[in-house]
Image 1 (cartoon, rainbow, N blue to C red):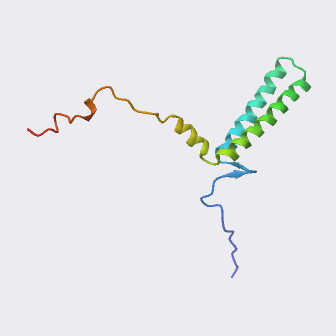
Image 2 (spheres, rainbow, N blue to C red):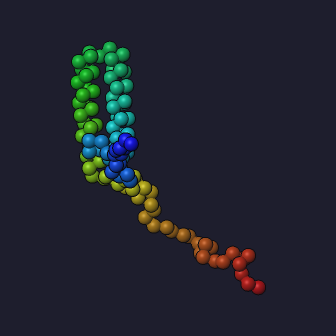
Length: 110
């Protein structure tokens, strides 16, 4: 009889994390890298010197990575989504008539 050895998955119910980036920030970084790649292609096709293109893209890429890590560290896994959702909550609700507080005619007793 052979002995089966199973690895225990200790990452159940934990957020996805890659080199310090949490959850959606990984996707933001991937989208940013793809945008930088397309930017390099466009600059190269426009006839710019390849070394100048490379310098622009590397500088932009460094800033992109720095900003993504800063957002990931500041807001965490769901914090940025919560902050964006909180912006949509109205500061106050103002009513110009009392019509919403009256009972509908169908509910009034006669």
